[in-house]
Image (cartoon, rainbow, N blue to C red; front, side, top):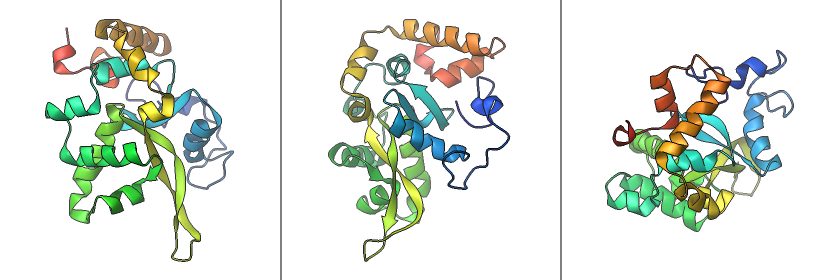
Length: 212
């Protein structure tokens, strides 16, 4: 995970320099900038709301382990047909599938978002990331009527298969869920030997039917 709160699991905060200051836009010292730098400068790293509904890093190596647990070997549309994903999530997912690298602003505009739908929209965007169907792909600026960039950059998204390749889902299907759970717990305890069992299960994303 990144940020100052590792939820009792692990945080990169302890490794941060005292010189870091967030939201300055300075790429070398603003950890908020590192989210996008990591994505653009590395081909084996992803960032998104993946743990406790909060932002965090994950490497390509560990992605299939979490995907095997979070998706349970199903595509988005299979989960949607089972009633596990909302209509709003489907509308967002459809857009991102057909038009990669859409920003949050563009997605809201294209689905006719209004302020009364804020909670539902944010919950859907988070769920799509937690279930590993979409991931942050970069950022872009809003454009004025004359095509000039303005304001702060806005996060963009792609489907996971588009970001890491179709083989990521195939790799997750080769793992048993118990194998994936055991492997992740083993790694957590290497990083944090005192990690709480319940916190680990929540971090991994184990559902009630997956619990032993």
